[in-house]
Image 1 (cartoon, rainbow, N blue to C red):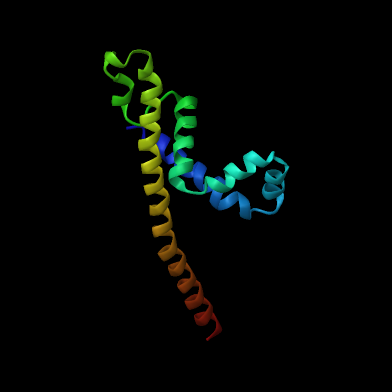
Image 2 (cartoon, rainbow, N blue to C red):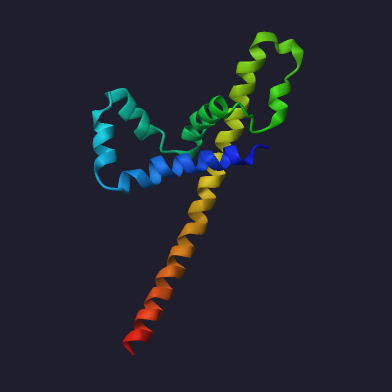
Length: 129
């Protein structure tokens, strides 16, 4: 399994849907300059599964690596359909794991943030006393 591809997919999703929209106004202004169909796709692909499918295809196309090597060796009876089918199935699995990864990051993030805030409040109260 190419874990680095999966981590890259989670990072891409986090960057485009969790962070860039909040780093000033430039990203949202840039989105508004895109044609309406691209703006609609951006809004509809907030789901880590939906975006993960397309991210998985893009990562595979960029790196040439399958998430699971078994997809690279489909039976010969698939003929010329084998490669597109392998890319499609690999992207489906990538999407499911991308969603799991994003949900895991969110699940870990909230308790970590609350712990950090509690520590900061404790240190501030200690310093004030």
